[in-house]
Length: 188
Image (cartoon, rainbow, N blue to C red; front, side):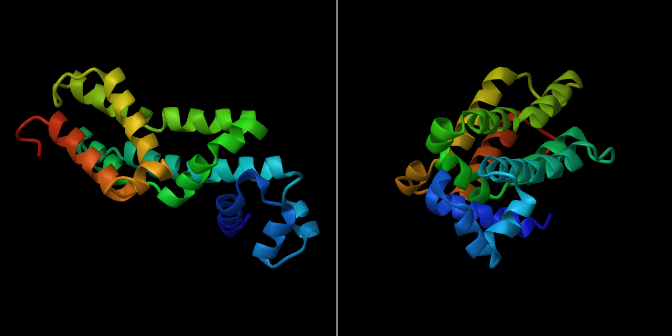
């Protein structure tokens, strides 16, 4: 399926939350509702496949970094943090989490699962770096908590609107804090 369909669903979802209609999507795509239903059997499926699309894009680019055998642990961690996801796509979903929780609780759980596991790869790298004495010992449970909560806050539209930080600058600042607090001298 053309990725453009998912971007159009995100646009509709961003504008109306879960209250967007198949007609809204058809209009956005310049097609008929019947054509939309040729791709999706329900709105539930539209939303779910769009959530999968957004998080698969992130996961795949992270996996490419993690599986690159030519990179050191430090290089992988640095690249992982520089691999900033598309704030619009994730933010659109996060902004309407209340709607998902109310009307699509299974999908709400799925988004939360993705957000809770998004940093697992970097946590594994940190553990590997600590095991090889390339990184200082840190509590990875607390590190993951810090990363998760910072990501969620940076995706919170109200928080960003009330603070002089963008998603991208916040992720970069967080990355700098974590990287330069973890790396041993000589590895920078």
